[in-house]
Image (cartoon, rainbow, N blue to C red; front, side, top):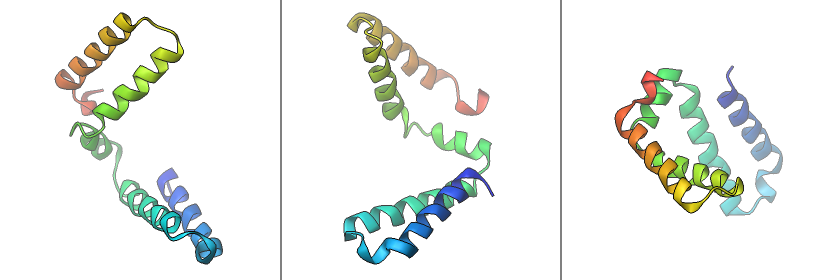
Length: 98
């Protein structure tokens, strides 16, 4: 059993114990989390990297990086330079190559 399965099972247990008392939008969100975790549990590392290579997560990664650089109080110019480099790396190196 991998971490994705463990996480999904914990959510299932939560739904089993508290599902009737949860607001519908919370319950629906937990059910979506379970669905995604079940999919991820079936993928190997190469397949997860292949999903990353689709570019679907590029903006999310850049946003996290930008936030970290802002927390570190980097200059706006440096932040933009680093984000540019990250974009270049996304375009030139596949996650499956790392």
